[in-house]
Amino acid sequence: MTIDLTGGVQIRREYIFAQCPDAPGTRDAVNVWIENGNGAFGMRIGVEALAPKWDTHEIWLDIAFSDGRVISGREHGPTHPAIGPEGLPTVRGAGPLRFRCVEPFRTWTVFFKGRAPEITAMDLIKGTIPADPVLRDVEFDIEMTMAAPPWVPGSLLADAGKTLSSGVEGEFMSPRYEQLFRAKGAMRVGGERFDVNARGLRIRRQGLRKFEGFWGHCWQSALFPSGRAFGYNTYPPRPDGKPSYNEGYIFDGRGKLKPARAVQVPWLTRLAPRGDDVSLVLETEDGPVAIQGETFVNTRSRGSAILPPDFPIVQQAHACYHWDGEETFGMVERSSPPSKMFSSGVMAADG
Image 1 (cartoon, rainbow, N blue to C red):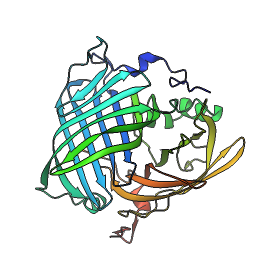
Image 2 (image 1 turned 120 degrees about the horizontal axis):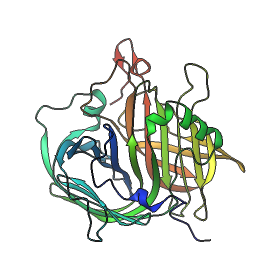
Image 3 (image 1 turned 90 degrees about the vertical axis):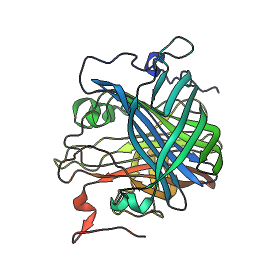
Image 4 (image 1 turned 180 degrees about the vertical axis):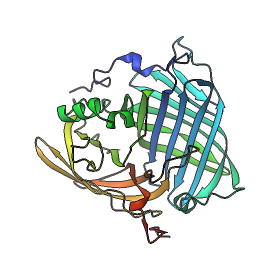
């Protein structure tokens, strides 16, 4: 059975906004998570255009090594021309970073050539970023080949779709979809060179996004060597007792995504550089699917925004997953309010 890599999503959604949208606060973003096949490192790379500041875009770069080192850069860079060699708006880039849609829902590339600070996972976890970190030359050129249909949140379970369309959960996510891929390429960090033979997740997001009232989440995804895959996203129980968003999928390497719901969730309860148990269970119409997971490097999201009191801390991590004897590396992002991450004024951090 062949795979419809569009999943029924209109091809126009792959193309970027070539012009600044009229509505202030509208975003156009490309983000990817990449985990190398040997577990040596994981990457999170993104560029976000935000109206009306369309002349410069925000760039996110994290390369987290299993030994605890992290190349972590945040900057704003001048916008790249949006029109690609095929005459279509296929390029979302700024400064040293460039994403390009080579063939919608099939092939994307990401290129970076610049400098970024080298710090540690513990620096990020504790929020103690050095004032004058060592800068490393970084260069990579990676081709991403899509391996599963895209998942549009709210499209697989009717109650999940209703929750997103009628509640604040939809504002947290913004209009988006995500798609698993295989990746090949090369990377250089300082004097070190790496072959990239990896799997990952691409997120395409366009539209308004708000965070007021956000109270946490858990988001996991991975592609296995056989082509099997899973993914889901959910929010903790709501303070008002109403149902929270909870939706995911199982993919057997053929056909369509099969709807699933998370029934065992590894909520974020501590901050540590590695070794968190992130095992999960997804319930499908065919029964439960149990997947074991453990993080091999954890980081803490950082940005320039001023956040309200007790806004959730976001952990962005890479994990080793096992499913019926098959192993892979994938992503996990979780968040919880600081009031749940501190005990007697001391952060729950190991290391």
